[in-house]
Length: 433
Image (cartoon, rainbow, N blue to C red; front, side, top):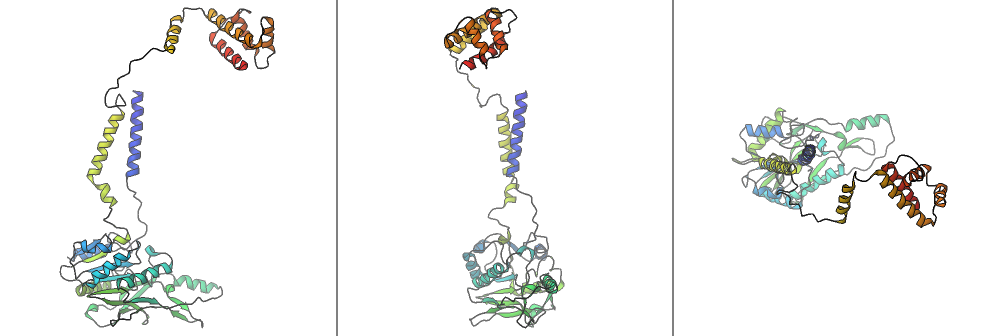
């Protein structure tokens, strides 16, 4: 019974460890990302839900751009929303496929982190800007080039006021965008709410005057980028419209215009509704790029671990193994013990059992002591009193062992116990070896 309980406890512990290792992690995502499932500040869940409630077709793209043709969306008349930079780098083949998709008559809204860096995009500025510049160039097949004014390094002495001003400059603040043209796209739209970080594009020139290092679009083609919106500073272009083949690219210099925190602004939602009426055809879709921000259909761990077939398989394996571990035999079939063949050890054990309690202890003790004294005599070439004197003079032989040996051999009187005697004989034999 005890062995069965120990086996059951070990099997249960092993099963618990197996389930713990195979279970997916439940660590919550601490940073809000621009995806259709994110309900945080920078997520797009509110926009996605709004489109579904309004009857507008929407689709969460959870595959690379190169597989857009495999998705259940029409060939033309769609609009895709992409936030830049991407958390998962896109391949050149993906940008080429997306360029072809736009050229065939679709639109893309690029929400670039140029004048503001949200929390999901914290990092080195040059890495962020370099990826955005490459994305615009590849998506437009090098027709349009995004450039920023060069800003030389300005050396200045340390001052507390300058440090405080620098800290305030890199603190995100509300910012408004205004229409740059009269068009039905801005019907009943007066200003859009956004967030910017002034320190990202402001610097002081050689005369100490504050200047703006603004972004611009250059092109050698006949079709130029159209300025759609500008910021509180009229020199700042907030959004461009880039023609690419039969389609369009809306390039916003401000990210998160349609995020959960800004979509509640009335003009932001109204402008997006106007945008849909001009870019999305009947029956077409609004496509969200969720793949490059962590949501993928190529391998969905939540769907894998939620599959009932996996649970049934693990349950069957666990129960079968538990029954197997608690079985009466380490095998499924009974074990056949091989026929035992007698050996010399078996003969000695049988003889010892036969003579047990049939020979007096003193007789056994005398024979053991006799054999030891003969062995000592053969090694030292001594006998009689000379042999006993040699044992007494040996520094590693105790007097107690000598007295036990004398009582066993008959040279002294006293009771004899076989277990202490065998221990004394063993110690003396170690001295001789």
